Image 1 (tube, rainbow, N blue to C red):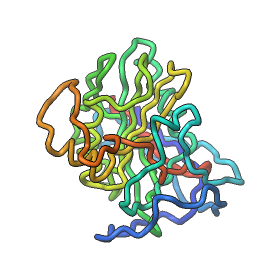
Image 2 (image 1 turned 120 degrees about the vertical axis):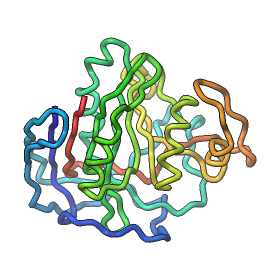
Image 3 (image 1 turned 60 degrees about the vertical axis):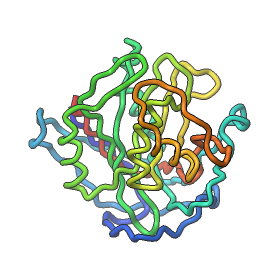
Image 4 (image 1 turned 45 degrees about the vertical axis):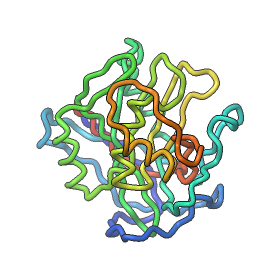
Length: 264
């Protein structure tokens, strides 16, 4: 099934070429108001394994952009980023995690993980996540592996999207990044420094979701040197920092339009 979920957005559609130097700080204001843009239409996809229709969900007329902060109960575990790297801001739809959980429900009920990939365009030094792709995948209760990834690349290339991250469920586990998750995420963050991983853990009563990135240079160096596979412990970072951290440059945008491609 392919589905398009669309909500209002700040700027008119467009793509900026990625500059070699990033400019925006990771620590920015917590709330600001945006202006909607109008022209996005639904369509039918025929080039993928099973053609299906898209549709549009109306967005609220008044919207805000709100930074996603660390839950109070997790302050000691996931502190605000200590990295000195300068990162672009990233906006995701306020509906993204809810809609993803709906699509993952069948797997979640069977204690199987579900994963999806996030594509974004860059406009005025900000990434806007406009595409969620759920690929064909092999899942267990503690892992999820995308297959037929060429279909994902086709969608990303046709829309000139940056692979800014991924989202997956922990159907019966707590909200954290496993060693396998860290290796998966390394491949994203080495391409796009702003790349982030969303973990959705519906049975975790203390923290139902988290948005994480590898610390840089600490966590990135550890993962770059690690040659192990499967679930395994990682060595400590050279500077004593955590391997991964809460990502504070990601904002929920209540009027951001996005498409969902479910290729399963």
